[in-house]
Length: 259
Image 1 (tube, rainbow, N blue to C red):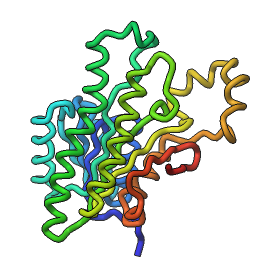
Image 2 (cartoon, helix red, strand yellow; image 1 turned 90 degrees about the horizontal axis):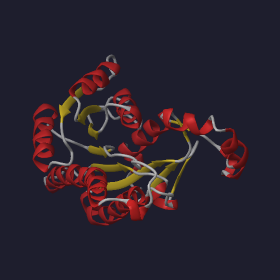
Image 3 (tube, rainbow, N blue to C red; image 1 turned 90 degrees about the vertical axis):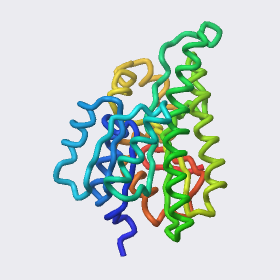
């Protein structure tokens, strides 16, 4: 039996219409998983679905504001109406650091916007998915996967993006708590976060000669992963092979480690 064959499984991916989220969606659909992409932008959703034409899994898209519980609940209902079940929820929606001003210069609006976008999205999506998964488990079908994308900032902090680091650390803490609460239902909760990933976001960094000369030698093994590595770990976490992994954070750094 192929433990990584996800044929018939269904995964929701918030923010799955670009970047890491799209890589996760493509990898899951390539393994036969049916995918429902939830994103705010209908055109991006359509383009993401088109990029997966020909893969073995079916792809569905929903316009959804993950910070709005009513929007999330509507998207979940529509996904269940289409596929009949949801086996995994990959909460990838969020925003980055948002500038280089110091903590004491931040406004309350900036603080609340960061928390709402990064935390509310995970909370609402996970809550809707977990309710469905636990109801299904009580009916004799215990299987569920909750996965949030995080950031190295959640471990090491970050200069002048303190509120961003705080939201990502909170996501990791939520994953650990859910791993304990939901294990009895056969539902796992994990986080994945990038180490040094080759992407448009890191291209500018690598073009900085001082960074390459002074910082790169201090990175253990100076390993870089590919954005597709996220897809690989997503497939693993969605499979039966990962059933004993819960409340772990997977760091993608050219391979991956869990802690």
